[in-house]
Image (cartoon, rainbow, N blue to C red):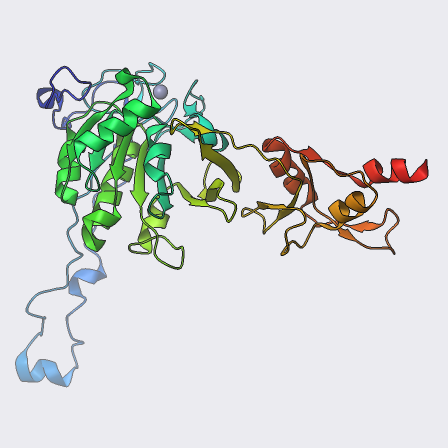
Length: 389
Ligand SMILES: [Zn+2]
């Protein structure tokens, strides 16, 4: 490993939590106990009633081993009491806000942290990504998952899919040389955990959970999610999709992550990044394409489109290609000679309506979706004005 990288491990600084909390530490468990535990009736729970026939036969009966609650190793976590940022033991102050007040398993985060949320370029603009956030990105072969993942400029790229050299080629094509991450080959969840334990900051990408196998993939997913939470950083896991278009691997994987994103090419060959789950932003989709040099670019939409699909799953359907549900206004505008490329709408022609159209109830979301892709929104007044002349 290149020791000059940001990945320099500092195991010596990782000390075990002290038995005596430092001054300023709040603990939910530090409150004085109200009274010593009393020996209640439960201690004689297994004794038989004095008149029990069994008592006469065999004396007091107790089970050979009383049931005990399972012993679990509880890991206490430290948080900045002021802003809620996870607090690693090697730091004397909160790494986000500088406060010195630390809570054990608790915080009262009255203060927000400046610059906690990051907007990465390209289609990532639709996902404001806060620290502690973990994203899973799924797509088929050649859907551009790796290129999209490179745009978040990871410091560490954990790979099972590709050798380091092609990963490096991809990064050099997309980004300046200083953005090429350390590439670590992983073959198991243990390898992932080991690599994560050695780095100071991210983001990190693992490519891919699917290639690690079912069980190892799930465990690796859990490892990167926990790493992002505890290290107050960002992690991205890549997954393949199965034939149905669903994410490969165990069903728990999407539940682990804060955001679930699919990338695919639509029937016109334009690439679409679709957010199907997000704790931080609205669901929706964004289009993108590769330019001649293989860089990620905004696609040109040189037709007029109806906005089809369900909320969170919109897509642009070119007019007059068959299969559109909401292309009514485009049809009317085309007949009257008013339609030009670059327009979008979502309406069905309906003579009984005052303005001649019936609109989907999520019309404003559809409009926002079209306008985000650089299209002009066509409304009934654009057609009526011309009809009225
Ligand atoms: Zn803080």
